[in-house]
Length: 309
Image 1 (cartoon, rainbow, N blue to C red):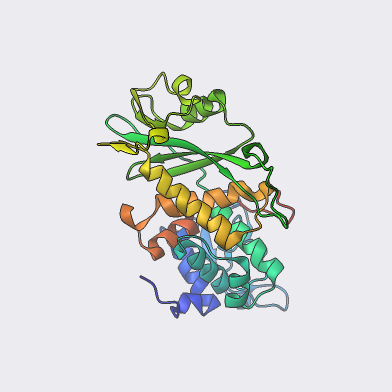
Image 2 (cartoon, rainbow, N blue to C red):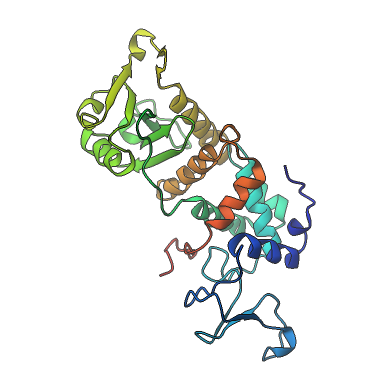
């Protein structure tokens, strides 16, 4: 549990100290050269110029200075650091997400700033290095869904081919991983499975025709037939992934409403992250927030949406 009146949500200096402890648990590391031995804090009176900045470190290996936000999604932001931490906590603790307007009101920033902060935090929630899912004796449920974007006037002739297509993998008592795809085909599903799932995993799907060819190399493949109202045969079911889709669709429809195809991958990362580190798997809101804060490194994006290289 966490108190929203915690000092690191109210004071920028305490927020910087807290972030340093999360990012550098064993001491500061230079983001320029990777050095971790010849690093010393720079006292305000040692700084050149008229402005006094706190939290600056000097690396004597590369002779460069840095702060805890350099090389992260928080870099060069004029938003106080304690507001970044509070925004991260709010998005990590809201099961179905939190709207940009709510962040705008809660933090006292402009809508444009809140929108950009939200996408930076979603980028921090995207896991850079993920091992494969499943393994011997494990079940991974696979399914596809079609997300409808809100329009000013609903078209009754709309088909699933006009919607955004997503393939999701959910490991029971484990992680969720979603992929925004152009087409839902056997080839697409097979490529995703080969990249994400161990071959000795049991795959469970519905009776969609795209999966038999995609999963033929795996340890097992079981299906449920929803067309005859079959939803479970013992451990054979897709109820876990259907529960995930329920949270995803309620969030995109009820909270975010006007999301764009361009940024859908980041919304999916947000829902995957919260579901992977859900309470059932042993994580509370603050632990989830700390994991997100550890993911801020190396993911800086500009307002145009491009990654800083």
